[in-house]
Image 1 (cartoon, rainbow, N blue to C red):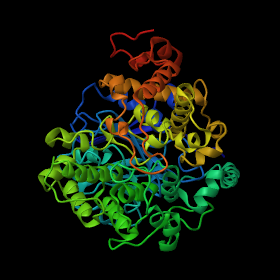
Image 2: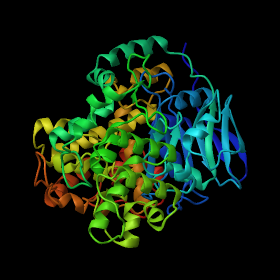
Image 3: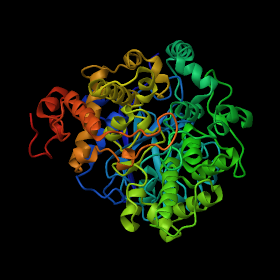
Length: 584
């Protein structure tokens, strides 16, 4: 039996304290499917250009997809809004138990669209296809305490960083084990005085035969075997081996003590697996003084190698600190690295050096609480802090978002992936480094083609919403699954991904984004000091050639605007009323 169709949206106005169920236009479902696609389309429609991300007029969506709760792998939800860190489109994802509970609680609804600002801190309780607005007694508490305040429920919430509108505050779920992390969706919740979403529902049932067949297929993919064996905690070993691990604030490409933080150490120190009773178990769980922590690859890479900290326990504590405070550890780690380098450059008078975990932890607390002048400056992002006190270009950013720890000087294709990402520097939209390092120099045209292919593919998968890793088992991008719920995507799923990427580009262009913002960070033109790629930089001319090829393949102008021909081909004319002209 086919599962019920999720074809409605719950609209929550916190200012008016109202909740309304509205139908999703059928054509939108066919064109954008769900998740990222539908969220992007709604956000474009809801916001005017120039809206303050932390103002009353911004909206935040909590989106599922038509296959949420049915697909194998880790279920996810998407938090979609205008980013307070970048001023651009933002979609951020988190897995764990919360997405399944939300899917069961929403019934025939595919998500929540939240607008307005509450007069006092509130939480949303979602149950039986409806939502109620209730006072938030846990305002001021951390993410772990807030999650545990609601037994027999699944909770997505903000911590102190979100309440104080830190520009890279996260939305934490499962007691801080999972985070919708990058770009500051948690700060948008804080600006609306929305502490938490409490979901009370059982995961939906159905499609068992299809699920079992694909779960078996998934287990036998290279990705499925990798997840069972190690998962993302092994990425520090990979990046270090190829000389693309940003170390000591992007000074080096290799960390001498990487093995102390890598998969072998994690296996030795783990107290178990997050989901040990499944065929594709979840991440490792390690004990810290603040409670168990589920380290991801970025924990060791950013808070370990990036800060020259080789003590596994100290790095785990820093990761748990970010979890508890509700703060993106990639941006937070970059803020600490920037402080060290700004101090060395004489820009700041702050006694902090690389290799000092206690000093790093103290600064993380200052940022989340905005309790010092430096903490307050860094809470708005590295670029904002540099604007206030100096020290620009000490660590790399794209569209004001701090780069993840894969260094493009070790794989040139990552420079293009970061520069063209729709939410700012992000390795999740495209990760060509995993193939380029084995193939040698791709050249500009192939690099552009590979980045575009991954960006479009992930846009499709994040509209289902499918786990990134399970997507490797979907040769047809999920067509067989969508047929089972009676959805026929307009133009095919490959076109859906391209269409969604162009919607987010139109959103960003409307906000003033241009070629100048799809830029090469100046820090990447400094040579690496050590490792297999010692002396390497990202050449500006080579980068410009890659960007030209990317725009050409995308069907965009030399300044990065989708042409009228591209708009017409993808059926996006309804979105271009805000533009005076679109060049052919």
